[in-house]
Length: 160
Image (tube, rainbow, N blue to C red):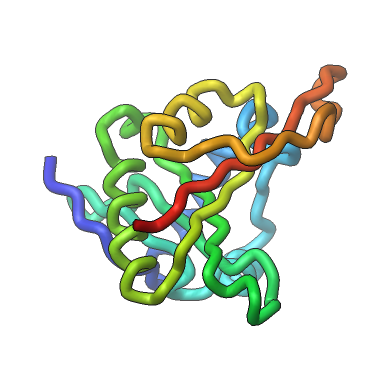
């Protein structure tokens, strides 16, 4: 299995939307992501704002990244989100995407990666911990999902 990692292109957008619609459920995000149009997706996720994992010309995963605020004093931080098509999870694709972002982060003087993950998403939490992420905070009972309160975990990894 040969995976190629590169920055997103407009030609990837339909496949990225498909991954979003499959992966982001009430177990993985506080609100289900449903894109209304290609234009809406493009406005929120312009070309180059994601790393994509390509297997045999097909997008099988992505890692989105952006600065958490426009403040100059916060530009050393990238907030990330990762999604891998369910058929390809557990094959190292998420780790490959993270490793590539770490290389880019070093080149661009990024010193910290941050993310948010629902406490109910135990598989994702385990993955992030295996990749060196540490919990830096918890928003207790932040979301009410399907009648259950769910904490929002804040995690980080320093770029070294």
